[in-house]
Every structure is written in structure tokens, then in C-alpha cells.
Amino acid sequence: YEIMKGRFHDMLEILGSTNEVGAQYLSNIPFDQWTQSYDGGLRYGHMTSNLAECINSIFKGTRHFLITSVVKETYFHLVELFPK
View 1 (cartoon, rainbow, N blue to C red):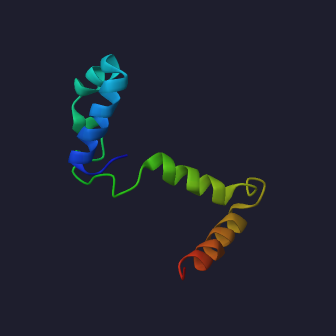
View 2 (view 1 turned 120 degrees about the vertical axis):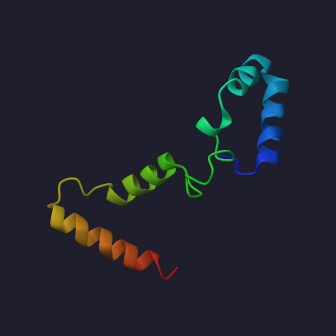
């Protein structure tokens, strides 16, 4: 999840000192395909999986509600979060 290129390479070097084969394997994959530091800003500062986990935690316990109730609950939850 490192967004700074220099820090990313530092972390890759640390990985290489622990697992040389793994670091070499990752180095052979183009960095723009799997790193935030080389993605050109396409991930907007967060990882999709983290966002999905956040949304899932908001919807937890609402699966049995009608869709209108889920929309209302989402709205009221967001109204509470935005002023913070």
C-alpha cells in the first residue's frame, strides 16, 4: 500500500533480505500493475478492498431490510459521519 516510490523500493529491499525469491518474483511484474506508488493516481488514495470492507461493515445487519430502508439507513449514517 506504499504510495511513495522511494519508500516502496525500501520495503521491497527489506522483503528481498527476508525472501529473495519472492522479491525477485515481484520485481519481474510491472510495478504499475500491482503497486500504488506506480499506478498513476488511479486508486485515489485508497485500496478497493478496504473500501469494500468499510461499506460491508456499514451494511452489516441490513440484509433482511427492504432496499428503501437500507438506503435511508445509509443516508442517516453518512449524515452522522460527514460533520466529523
